[in-house]
Length: 123
Image 1 (tube, rainbow, N blue to C red):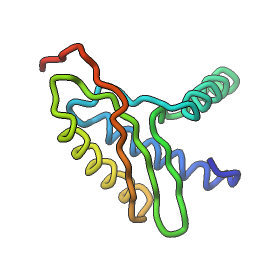
Image 2 (cartoon, rainbow, N blue to C red):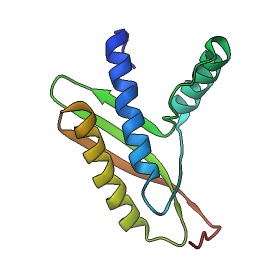
Image 3 (cartoon, one colour):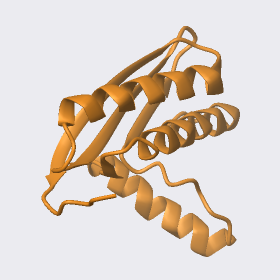
């Protein structure tokens, strides 16, 4: 995150757009935060307790806004009853579209499939 408050808000908004787009893809069970994401969650929980206001759930999403583009890494857990490459491709497309719409900048997105959920979820 950036030290500039306006930049931090823009970055959080972009991360929220990316998280919502990724979660909307069939086959994505959840987003999985890395170590930095877990620390950010603790900070968000403290913020919520102190202020009573929610912070968007962007666990599993890392976003970096630059002057020229927006870069993101999305960590997903895929259901065993879905083809991982297809889910990854759809998440990539959805997140690129969401980030470009939210920021007006070209998006460079990396999708990491970090786990497979072995419980089938038939819909």
